[in-house]
Image (cartoon, rainbow, N blue to C red; front, side, top):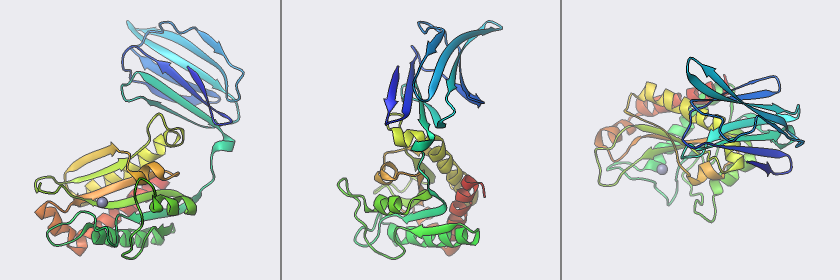
Length: 299
Ligand SMILES: [Zn+2]
């Protein structure tokens, strides 16, 4: 299946009978996608396109030691700016999205926007002693300072205890971020499950669903940003690793640049709340966030 995306983008959808694993690589103008264990089935050997970005697509079945691999080769036009490959949640639709250079928006790559979650009348989750909004702000300001020391520019969605509207009708946080047009955005939160003191640990979210062109095109970046943050947080804070997950949080869905949301630890867990009240723990969280961002940026 082939769909046009915007004025000069294309999406190919390869349907398979069962969920597949895939690997991809690119050499010169050719994107190669390998589907081990998949038979070519009804696909023709050769598809010719006269679209702007794809010259042709070939399918080939390779036999090696009794194992079959279907190899898809997409010959692209030199206008190709970026491509991304990913699967639908059931694993049966392999999506390949390609856009030309004109559709890649220039960003202020050396600028990072940090968002201390909640604020003002919105306290966020509440521990027995402290409110989430205050923890988030402290960590964000510390992380921003460390990033500036690394020569990275930093802006905050808020640097004081103010409320920014965040509802399904208006997302002032993403509006600020999108206006600033940074290379990346990180929202900083502390977790909480009311009435459950057992939940603990660190988790990081990103959002790049296959059916959203803009976000899917950033799939690699969004995932990589979240993974870098989670890796550093777990290494420094040494709390249980709850992993990197996808969720359609408003600030992840509405921001137009690569974005991630960290949940440092749980205010509903007495041990972690006590850690979140200590300066050294907030310093460690800030260091982890700054280093995760720097690693993602290749700095
Ligand atoms: Zn929160």
